Structure formats: C-alpha cells, structure tokens
Length: 476
Image (cartoon, rainbow, N blue to C red; front, side, top):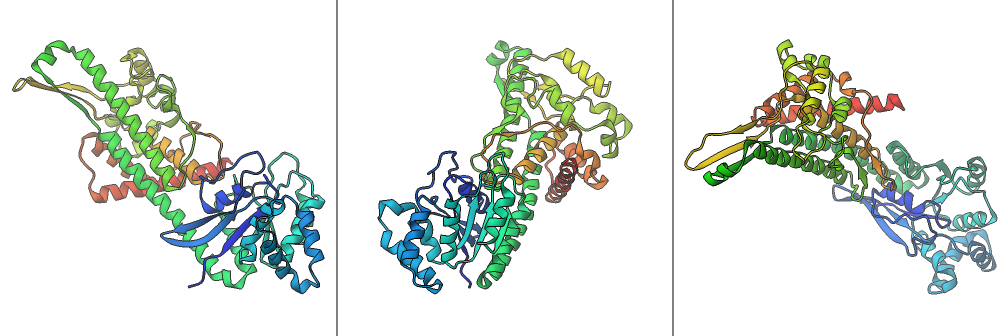
C-alpha cells in the first residue's frame, strides 16, 4: 500500500504555520500564539480516519537566518544538479549548531521526502528574507505549494502572488481560521497533481474526509435526537417519609423538584454540546451561551429565548396539530422562571407570554403528589407538556452543530452562540415536521421511542440541519 504523504509546513516565524497545521490535521491542541518562536522543534500531526492514516502535517520552526543558509549552499554547490544533495549536506553538517537549529529542524523532514507547504502572511510586504527562504526551498527539489494566509489588515497579496508564482508550482490564498471545508480538499487535490505517487492516496484522503463529514452530520443528528428524547420525557421524582411529609409544604417541594428538573435539563443540554464538539474533534472550545448564566433573563428557560427559538402557531398546525391542540400547546416550559433556582414562579410573566403566544391555557410540567401509602408519599415534576420546549432545544442544538461543523481547528476565538432572528424550521418539509412532532408527543407521554421512531426522528433532524445550512448560506 502507498505510504501516506507527509507535508512540512514552513515559513517565517509567526506567520500562520501552526494555524494551517491545526486546520488541515483537525487538531485544536496545537499551540497557536502571537509571539514568534512558539514552535521550536518539528512536530508530526497525522490525520487519521477510521484507523487509517491519510497524511501527516509537520509543524516546523520558522526560518531565522535564511540568507546565511543560502550563502552556505551557494558556496558548496557546483551546479543545479547537486542542489538537493547540498541542502541535505547542510542539514547533516549543522545539526547541533546553535546558529541553525531552526533551519535544520524545518529542512530535515523535507530532505527526508516531505512535500512543502510554504506559508506567508499576505498582510506584510515581500522582502529579501522571503526570497532567500523560497530559494532554499526550491533547492530541495521537493513538490511545493505556497499559501497566502493574511493575518493583518494590510493586503500585499497581489505582490506575493507574483513572487510566489516564480518559485512554487501552486499558489493559493488560504485563511486557516475561516477557509471552508471544500478548500481543504482542494489543497489535497492540488498536491496530488504535483507528485504522481501521491495522486491516489490523496484522492482517497479527500474521499474519506468527505464521507467522514457526512457521517458526522448523521451522528450529530442522532445525538440531538437522543438528547431531545431525554429532555422531553424527563421527570424529577422524590419519595418522602411520613415525617418529611409533615415538615415539607407543597410549595417547598415544588420549588425543590423544579430546581432539580431545571438543573438536569441544562446539564443534559451541555452534555449534548460537548458530545458534538468532540465528534468534530474540537476538544478545547471556549463557548459562551445564554444558559451558562444561571440568573440571567437570557437563559434556556427565558421568554427571550422562547421568542427566538420557538416555532409559530402555523408551524405547529402544519406539523400535525388540530385546532384544539394548537390552542392547548400554550407557552413552553421554558417560561417557568427567568431566575431559576430561586423558586420564583413569575406568574405574571407566564400569563403575559402565554397570552402573547397563544392566548389560551398553558401546558406546563405539573407537580404531582401521590397519596400516602405505606408511610411514603411520592412527588414528581415533569415531563414537559409543551412541544415548544423541544423546538427551542432543537433550534439551539442545530445552531450549535452548524457553528461546530464549520469551525476550523485553528480557531481560538470565543464561540458566541447568538439566537436566530427567524426560525429556519419554517422551511422544513412536512414529512420531517410530522416526524419531529410525533416524537415530541410520544416523549411528553413518557413512551420510549422505538428504534424505527428514533431513526425517523434522526432523519428529520438531519433534514433540519440541511435546511439550517441552506438558511445560513442564503444569509451570508
């Protein structure tokens, strides 16, 4: 079997090399810092799918003394035919030489057979230092590709394009933080055209990565389906002894069970977030989302969140509700309180929000206290009786998935999840709407979904993800 290709990512210090490696290897553990010299030794980062290594990226230190290196090469070369061997001789002779530690580290994988990805910052001017670097790389004779990864606000990319075109077979603009997935595949195909031995393995790599992307979407839909089933059907229970019954008022019991119910729901939603992030190999995301603020009016159960993520009455009707069911759907469980954990019921807010939304009776999670039996009494809170709760969770989950699936592994900025300004589920096909609503109805009754029903829900959510993808694309 053909050996997986190896690419050495080289260039000036602090010009985006590590960002390129992080994105193309799908590894957000790679250190990316503003100060030069973050990478001091070569480090291999293989990309593996289903146990098969597709290719390896080598993160390298930046050039420090390229003109000195070039002077040495020119002094020890007789003709162009010996250029690759002269570079090899430089690396062998200067290993351990403090003057050229970084150059030896970055050239070593190249003389060992790696292809070259030369990264430049298109926001800084072209210089003699860069020309020396590019000349050294050309001397290696290895397949090479240059990427213009602009970091600052200035734009010298046209100058760079002309200069790079004289040294490299392929020149591309590539924003390591924001480049879409298709550009990743395009780079792999470009390298396959530069080296015949790599054409087949890189074509296989692009195919595997495309299949992985489809698989991850399906797996994400399954994770969301399972979370929705858990959240919609969850019931908080407590069993009290005779003494506890005497010491606990119904109001105090209701507050305790509500608080536990809310905590469970939030924890379950956060588990879903982490599961999807890890599925896409994002292990270190810093995320800011409304529900993280326990006493905020913008948390998961607030009226503000409902307005952004709940669906319309028209949507519910087309999802399979009759007129009476629509009237009874009411305001969702999320409006039980904007300061959860305090026990405040804010009945006025519930009434106003419910009147605004449907103007009818409310279907909130109920507190049920059973009869005293054998000295024990059982109390329960939940499950949620309003499908809107499910649509809010679904909308937020799909929005989170979209950001994660489109986020490159070089991204280190805070992920801020903002509410949508229009509910994209309105564009979902009727079959998917019905499957989602049927699943919600069953969960509200605490009837577990069958395997087929769960598969149908997963397929419907996958359609919702596609609808959201299209909606975001049209907004761009």
